[in-house]
Image (cartoon, rainbow, N blue to C red; front, side, top):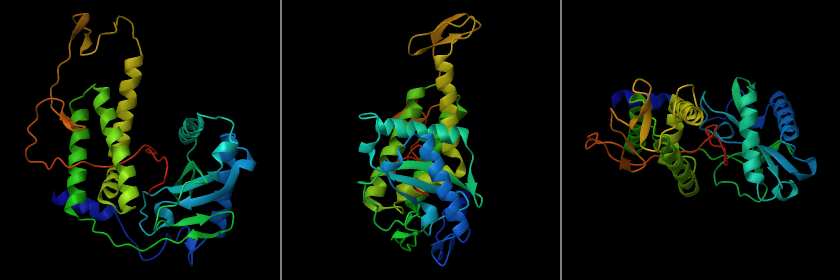
Length: 299
């Protein structure tokens, strides 16, 4: 627990000034503005978003606030009229897919900070207290508020410990339970969105999510899950697809009942019976993203 508190202190931060790599006297550096504007236009072209549908390009998230760290993305959002994009009924899925494809095929940084792209509807309200900087008008649409938070908060520490345990237990036991991983992801996504809506950027659940992301835990889980899904969809030579609850035994060359060598807690139930009585059972929070980055653009 002492090690965890120490690590939390180094990753979750609050500053008295905005990121000096990006801002001078609370105004976006001209060189940074030019680079971000160019990236925004390139992504709009990549995603086939018509210029008439684009209302603005904004910077949000940790790097538009006082809680940035070395891990923080530059959250660059195109503010669009989604009704002006020809993909009715599928526009959100389409834009999310374009976002993910862009992330897989590009590795762009500005002053050493990775740039995360997203498109949000102009009707979506800005979260209270969140900094929102407009590239179009080169000014703040909403200035960030300075908020002090306790990175050693037991509530944050316990949430990180609980979710870290769930993920590590599944991976260390070489679990092939895709549904268990998806349940954790859905919990993280739903709870983070709810936490931000009710408590803002500094809600304990959102801070726990950021700590897990900063540690690389979420990336590790997403990579492991992708490998499981790829393996589930693949059919290798001499391999037979087995029914749920069974797996292929290459030595016996037949389907056998799955065995779990380790028990892990996920999504509010026990996958197999690990004694977890010493843990709090508190739930965490999170989202995809870039993670699952996604809507709202956190730090």
